[in-house]
Each structure stands twice: as C-alpha cells, then as structure tokens.
Image (cartoon, rainbow over all chains, first blue to last red):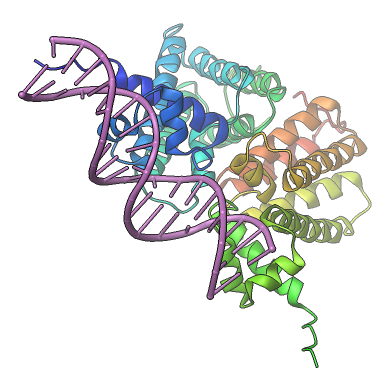
Length: 189
Length: 189
DNA sequence: GTCTATAGAAGGATAGAC
DNA sequence: GTCTATCCTTCTATAGAC
C-alpha cells in the first residue's frame, strides 16, 4: 500500500478557489494563486479539476448548493406561501448584508464572461432561471399575479446589484406588496 | 517631410475600443484586438492613451458623455419634475431594450475589477453616484420622499441587470408610483 | 518498492507596454 | 515588430507515507 490520499483535498482546493473567485473575480485569479491558497501542488489541482473552467463550474455549483441549503432552511419556517416568500426575501437580504458581499456570484460570472456558453456559464444561467422560477412559484402561490412576480423579480435583481443599505428597503417593500391590505395580493395599488 | 497626423485618430481608436470593451468586457479584450479593430499601429495607440487602464477610463468617460447627452435631450421635453422623471425612466428602458445591450458599462467594469480604485473605477463610481443623485433630485422634485427615491433606485438597478423584457414592467411601475392617484407622491401605498 | 504529494520548470499562447 | 511578463497546462524531479 502506498501513501493514503488525503480525504478532503478536493474540498480544500474548491473552498480556496471559491473564496478567491468570489472576492477577486474568476478572470483575475490565476491557477497558481489557487494552488498557493490551497497549499497543494498543481498536479493535485489538475487531478481533481480538468481545467480552470471546470474549477469555475465547480465553484458556482458549490455556491448553488450552499444557497439552496440556506433557502431550504428558511423555507421550512412556514407552509404559508406568503410567509415563505418573505422568508426567502429575508434570506437574500441577509446575504447581501454579510461582510465581504461582492454581488451575486452567478451574475458576476456572466458579466465577466459575456456571451460565453461554457460549463460555468450554463451553471450560472441554470441557477438564475431556477431561482426566478422559485420566486414566481412563491408569488403565485401567495395569490399574486404575473405582474407582481415580474415586479418582485425586479426588486430582487436590484437588491443583488445594489448596495447593502438597500436590503431593508427591498424587504420592506416586498412585505408591503405581499401583505396587501386589500386582502388580495395583486401588483396594482 | 513627416506625415501629417490624421485628425480623428484618437476618436477612431476610442470608438473601436469602446465597442469591444462593452461587448466582450474590458478584461477579455487585448490591446492587440483594439489595434486591429481600429486599423492603426500599436505605437499610435500608446501615443494617444497611456495604458490599458487609461484607455478603459476614456471608454467609460465616453459612455458617460453619450449617456448624459441622451439624458439631457429627453429632460428637455418638459419642465415638470414628474414628467422629467418618467422621461428619464423611458430613456433607460430604451437603452436596455437596444439590440446588443449587455448591461450597464459602469456596473460591468466594477464587477470585472472588484475592489479596484484605479482611474476607470473612479470614473464608474463617480457616474453611478451622480446618476443616483440625479434620480433622487427628480424624485424629490416631483414631491416624492426619500423612501420613494430608494425604491425607484432599486427598480433602476434591477432594470439595468435584468432582462430587456423587464423594461416595460419597470417603466410602468415607476409611472404608477409617480402618478399616484392620491395626488401626493409618496412611497407608501 | 510503490504510490501520492509538492515544488518548480517547460511549453505555447497571449497579455500589456514600448 | 519586439520585449517582458504572465496565463493555463503539462511534465519532471524529489520527498514522504505506506
């Protein structure tokens, strides 16, 4: 038997890469930088990931898993669609307010690589489409119409690309829109 | 006798660079690509621009000038603050719907170079701050409060990073918010 | 000895700058 | 065009664990 492979190597590398990619951007971070941060050799990196694009795709998939775990957590709070919608809004706002927040990882990648259709781009686009669909389901589940879904998605987009100070404004607004005093939840005032 | 310098060389280079930078991103475009698109020699490029960062700053300044010219144009339509606000919203929506639209050039640069404080980053941040101030002035001029200004800026941010299809939703919503049936323009419903 | 890991050089392409 | 530097990727050399 030869030397036993370290068990968490892939995760170590991926975590290091994810931190760098998110903070400085995928394009700005070189593979040598990832290797240095992970404290491993280049060989090991290319053994676990086929290329930089593959590593970037794994990074975005990791962010997706973390985000989905957090979302699933807060959605457990209630079975009421309106409550779940507000819980989701609060989850996003919390993330935006976290120190070190530098925008949405998926939107950032698509901005860094416009028009690209490689694996990480597909991961990013798929997540954004699924995220939008989830918001829409919650809105319609809460009795909202298509217009309200469009408007809330507009706020969510603004929330992701705006300053952290706007988080409260966004959450309060969504709350107000969903908890419409008329009883029915529609987009119009 | 030396050859007389072509008069519009700087503009030719800058226009070519601007098109490439906006379409593919600043990081993705090399100086050789700019030279090829401009149809000039490399030495001429570095005669007119000190570095790539300098060229990028000139590109963002050009975008700012064009945008301000367009905004000034539509703001001439009316002296009524609410009308001007809606005219500004329409201008943004038109730009977002234009073919080849790939997001806000300033926001894109700051995403491509996070944490940077070089000249183009300062140009981008300055424009965004000034733009936000302009929106705020128009909202308060139309009788809106600070909350409404925050909310409209949220919509504008969402408009810039959303899909072109959301342009109409955004404009209609801003119109509805500004032309509040109660007569007074406030954020609350 | 055999396998895994690290460190670093080499390759080939491409970057910015002159 | 050239020069230097850096990019991603591969390969070599060496050290260490079994």
